[in-house]
Image (cartoon, rainbow, N blue to C red; front, side, top):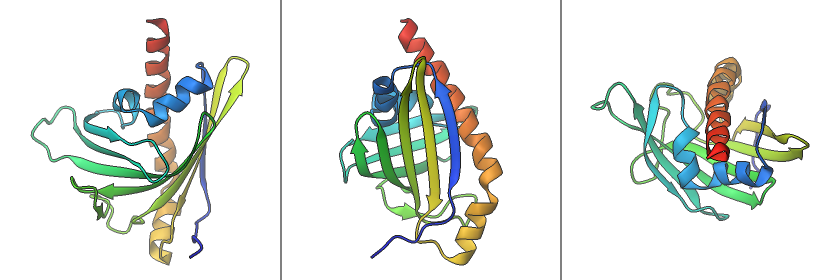
Length: 172
């Protein structure tokens, strides 16, 4: 079956870190747990099997609300080409890794396809993220497409956390 993809959401960020370290930050639990989250959230579980067919399964909860329910997510890696490219199917999930609907947006696509390309530049790495609804129906695709502004805000915040984290570990 051929994937049916929506128009892409595109986001770019430059970070002052070598490409190999940025790749590790996207594929290793010890790094992902420090930055892959919206501000105000904390990652309470982070399991990574960084191989094609492997996954990144995680749980997030509101930092100020320790008794709040967690929100689960999962990436299934389709392609890992160190240190330059990561392709993953992204979904909301349950604790067992099963597919679930977005907890706050019932018409969000069940699956999205994320392609992250890392380009080494003289002072660091350019992160190019392309994210598309994957095999979504017309309503899900419309919800995804109408959410690009919010996705920009979310990814901007997460990438700022990444840049700060990379700066901190390189200074150590």
